[in-house]
Image 1 (tube, rainbow, N blue to C red):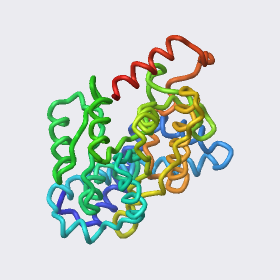
Image 2 (tube, helix red, strand yellow; image 1 turned 30 degrees about the horizontal axis):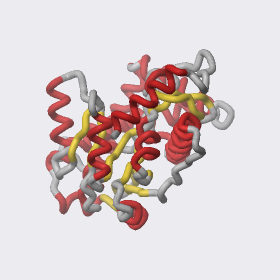
Image 3 (tube, helix red, strand yellow; image 1 turned 90 degrees about the vertical axis):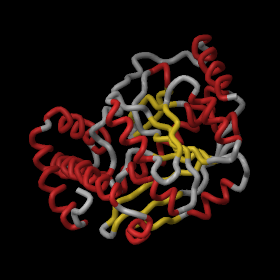
Length: 299
């Protein structure tokens, strides 16, 4: 797959992606359901189907591109990658508190380490270990090929992230996945309440590390990596409210990119799976205890 030309990757991804869309009923239903939730009043059913087919094509292209990545070097990358907003990123990092890189399963997120390499960014990636040992080893080695370090989401991860930030390192976190109710807060995403991980907001509030968006967008000529301006850290004095407001701010940024390039986001994931069946008491002792424990682990 590494020797397939860009035109060949597009050609085969289009055909294999359309075939997968036809035969993979489970993920087709998930993608169409998500798209109808997000764009039900803005796009027709036919438009949602077209986007969903593009999503399947995008996922197939990722496989070809990972093969290309394994067989390529720095000279190859510089020919098809462009980066913008690096000044914004370096300005944030100059504050000396590390940087929290807000990103998502967008474009080909597996190629983000290339952007870090080209931009001379000594990044740390937070990731969920895969259940299959062979795939876990393959992707861990692939992502760290050019110096990126991996932080698995297991016990002690918050403490490790906080340590990296204190040493001035950027830490990238994918913030677009559904989590269980006890791991997140319910905030708006495409006008629906989505349970979203609180980790980035807690880290930003506790460490003072600036939050900078970074997204990899596939283009006709290759890949364009965009670093956005630093997001303001909202502080009201109410920790629960601050976590909710900042997390919702992160969702708005992800939604912005998903709206602009809808076929490049991971619509086959059940983003709204966890439902807010009842309001969460804002003074809940259980919730306050959980917040305190998470903050303590970050110290």
